[in-house]
Length: 205
Image (cartoon, rainbow, N blue to C red):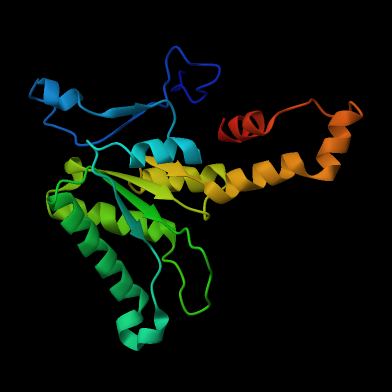
């Protein structure tokens, strides 16, 4: 009995986590325009990698905030917020955007301004673009604080995200490395010394 490769670290010869970002052409047609994509070594991004994607002029990235205002009554319902998000994504892709970044970053959190659950937002936009024949024209990236476990990453990818930037999880790694407890353990030789960058890479692995 054989099984498919499931370990990208130890079975790298037969398994890859690489993902392509950008417009996808017809797989039956060969042309240089089909190769005009950005290849990522992993679907898990740090903030610097996400920033690089946002600065790529060819991708024409569009950041879509997942927050909505419940003070609007029925107009501020979750259902209407999802519809508005899908319409905004639709308009962006039709305008030439090849990268949609769904983000729940906010300078201030308010009880009357919640965020659409990121899995729901990704899935809704994914299905909307499929139904309108636009899905192959753009990639979806989730910039979220709502993802920190392996299962959550798998669900987001399964629901249509090409990549995820788990900014809160990465910030937690940085705070863990800078904490007095961690510093003392490393200083006393009770824990291997790692840099902040290594701590983040270990999490992404």
